[in-house]
Length: 249
Length: 305
Ligand SMILES: Nc1ncnc2c1ncn2[C@@H]1O[C@H](COP(=O)(O)OP(=O)(O)O)[C@@H](O)[C@H]1O
Ligand SMILES: [Mg+2]
Image (cartoon, rainbow over all chains, first blue to last red; front, top):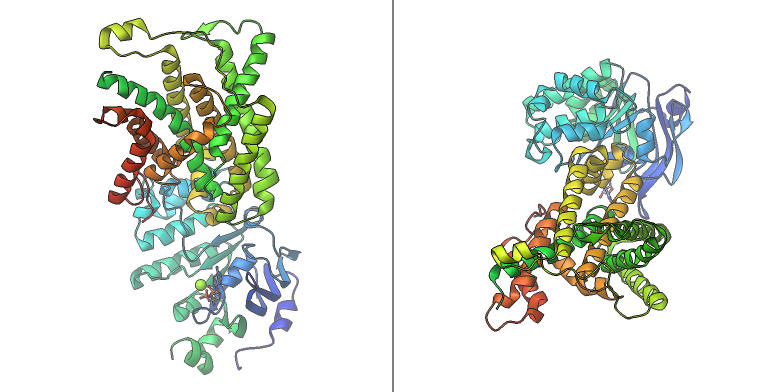
């Protein structure tokens, strides 16, 4: 474990992390998926979660975002415990989440999807939506179209924009490039980077591990519900064991 | 032998009543996520709320004998009372029965059968099993319509159909052009993503019950105005409501309107079929439902493949 250092030590090192997950067990019904999982996100970072299918990456995001309640352990946002806080409250505390699947309202129009993304905004909804149309011209072109008529790439853009209506401080995003053509993948990552530069800290799950790590500050390799390796993106990309096992050689 | 147009007129009246019931049934399926077998009896609750509440109004509120389209103001107020009663009953049921159960759709369906029996039993216990009529005067067919096109349409029928149109159009505007309506559609579409977006779905579910119950009550009161008010009245149309909802595409409000129209018409046009009497109306309605579902398995407006 060259790139992997002691997980608990890192997570505890500082109190001003944007997000800390510490010793979390979680799962579905009575099936445990996450085992003593710890990770953190510093303000301003992009952190990438990689690992094989079924490793529990999506489960981590669902547990952080209150769709699952951790069985034990702690989840803290700016130092405050948020384990089990429901999603509708987390949205109001500056956390956003883009699910891996079914991440748009398919029977609603593009415009209505964005409005639903902003139900918790107290003011400036119209201006914010116009701003997003300026940023994502494809959405502006399709504003009256039902989301189900969009292509896969357009849907990912809409799902991303829906979460961005709230201008979250912390964004959790699950496989934004899944199933997209390589040219579009690049565009999606550019969007993620652009949002990060405007001050949003990001946890991103990615199947395209190399490309995902390339735009990230740090990464965690998950396997069987726990962190196997962690380190800076460069360390993970350079680590031969990580490369062999998780980056496809 | 009545004219074809007469059957169509009867069909429009019956369809109106079915549509009002079917919308709520479909809403509960779409947002509450279960088939509510108590919905027919909720129509009965609304009808009794209207007829009992209305008789108090005529006694204590002056001026209720003024008539609008030949129907006294007291009836319109009574419908409002029925809507309020049904809404309170539906919300109380949701809080005391469905929500605490935290159950699967099948468990909720079975619970709703119990709720249906409880509504019906409570009404019969308090008000007896006999039939009642709304005290709105006799009012025969409107002469001018009868003379011009030979169809007998009463003022009651006109009131039922026009108020149904007003209610359905209002619901359409609510669903399409208000934030609450968009939240309702979003929650029906994808409840998890709705919460992820910040929608407080428990508030949306409350709104859904209020709308469904109020429309059911209006449908029940109109059914009572057209025929009789008695404890089994809502249960007697429940299967027809389900046929309308399934035909329209279960979970779709617009489907419930289309399905209600088709089923209501089929039900009333049955006597036009040679050697088939009006008593086979429900059977013919179901045959039509099955036939359409064979061609469009997800219903008229259904989008589930
Ligand atoms: N809704 C669910 N109910 C039960 N098990 C689930 C559910 N979602 C995922 N799982 C299981 O949890 C494990 C981890 O899944 P997931 O977190 O989606 O993995 P990843 O995102 O890393 O591919 C898998 O074994 C998967 O089968
Ligand atoms: Mg996943």
